[in-house]
Amino acid sequence: MTQEEAQQRIAELEAKLARALKPKTNTIKVSPKGAVSVYGLGKFPVTLYSSQWEKLFGMQEEVKEFIMDHTSELSVKDSVEVANG
Image (cartoon, rainbow, N blue to C red; front, side, top):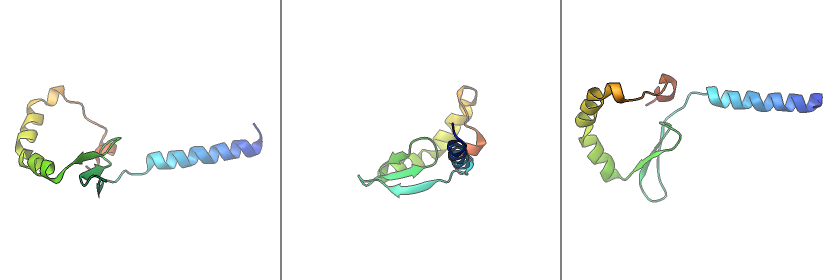
């Protein structure tokens, strides 16, 4: 590997590291099919139609209670990944 190739590889790795360390932000978009997509919670967006979101919001207390009742069974993502969620 030449010095030039090594410098190019270092620059690539630094750029990759900068992207990995960049704080993730949540964004909301309208999907091509007219649904609401929330990006930034995980690897893939969470996409539901507006009526589905409304139904989910109506279940908010049930979901919270379920999580509390099953805390010992549930996994938790690193706080860095969910800091904006």
